[in-house]
Length: 257
Length: 325
Image (cartoon, rainbow over all chains, first blue to last red; front, side, top):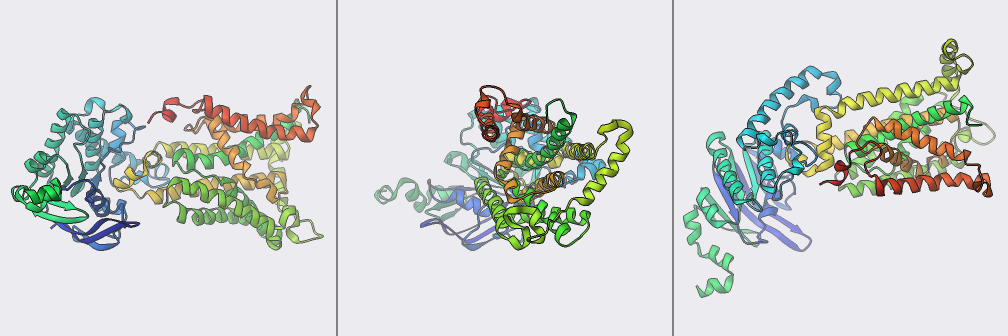
């Protein structure tokens, strides 16, 4: 297991957003995290990615305990998240958005531009090549020098995905990647997500509302409701699971059915 | 002083250079890293006091005093930054305002250490006049000696001071200008735009912000010490919160995100500020000179508002950078 989440809890004041959720993600899988609104999916993402600290419970990623680590440390260990509304740097060009995400740039140390200009510009050339490849992959090459602020919502999501890959993650967390994306770009995005696993061997954990889409791409589905994991299994089994149907359709409808 | 006297212009140049260094500190924090520091004056005050105390009270040589001033500013930056940098930017704004006032009130009330309200003159206690800039004046005099052949009768210590100040200011601009264009500056720009996104790609945001805060504090410290050395005496009243807003006005005048516009903004501001004393024409002569001195504060406020309303990008800035999201 690449990611093991065990009994995590998070309360905001009196509201328990996540109450004792446990789930695993297998290396090399595409796992979907679904559930009705308010089920605690995004909070679970925030906890797993280190952007929030759980009140209780443990998280293990790639053999390391991470529940006390901060977001940037978790990202460096190879668990990178992509946000629900794309957070690209709008004032930077598309290319710069990728360059900033690269790892091991000695020029990011203070004074390096003066003290080690050679190493900085050598690494900068490598990073630039890598960024150009990634842009070609998500078909944004024609926008390389455009300001990211001028991109459409869907293009921003593609850019953010490419940026996350610059960090060279082992696993990537996608929070509703299809929300607000035009259908054509959505299909392209979906293809990229499949390719991530097939070509780069990157594990994907994805929150998504489109059930058909979830069923078509994921190997496993985890269902959350009211802060807990209520079901966990292959897509077919989940579709037939009564508790899941109840959670989605409401208790009365479930009882009537 | 009249407006045609070169000595006046040397004074303007020196003050403009010191303000440039002060505003550069804020530039690193606010324009580069997006940290709203509303207590910049505290770094100036702490450094000036640390220097003066070490020299006047403990009889240490001036270079040690200057080093002490720099260290004091860094300590203050860490004290403010450690609790506040983890929080949202608005909390840093509040913490820095408070920090600035705490420093001023401490200077006012720790009479045994700081000389209290009468300032640096009182550093040695009642009845004695304390000085701290003697060796600085000797140093300026030495430089002036070499300036004589070039500047003739204006090869004076205050000319030397103006040159020293501007050499430092330009060196700082040059260093920062290149840093800004390096990968380090790119991360800073990212933090200014969206620090959560920067953390998500594995950068230590708090660490970068701390760097910006400390660099800004060091530049503030240098400007604070130069101001103290130029005048020779200072008191807590010289470190009112308004000084911080002068630094903001300088940045806004020149153009928020252009480092080369900082010295331009600083010179414009200094002209405006020292120039108001020449507003002795009718109908302003209806006010007495003391009241006219307050006009400059009105002018500073008015300009700040007018610029933000009509030209938020400053003289040289790019309007799109400020307005577009």
